[in-house]
Length: 180
Image: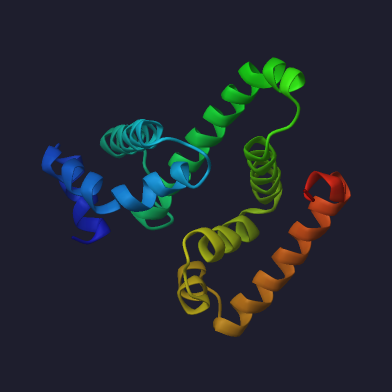
């Protein structure tokens, strides 16, 4: 089913489309949580919450889709999981002081720092880096999606965006934040 057909069905209140989306993207979306120290139950909760948010936005008629539905839902999942990790971090800070550092917490912190820096880049850079590194899109697809003249333009932009990200991370954080 194409994205346009999915949106049409959702606007008509077709709940079977919600089931379709759930099954189609389940593995991809839950992998976000599972690969970032989450449990299967947390992954399911985050994905269900993200799908509900997408559904409500689509039904309201206020959804302006500038990417694939999968990319949009992925972003929601990622943001929800970041918030959950932040919430968990606040509750476990006292425990961390007592027990010393944990590799999982340090990994989550590095991920949080990178995501924070990516989100502070301009919209084009954020999209290019997200599409390339998180969505696994080819440079040809990125060039087409963002309306670049050709693949070489997209590659050049990605290179410059990556350099910006590197500079931003280095200016705001020390090497000890990333080294074990």
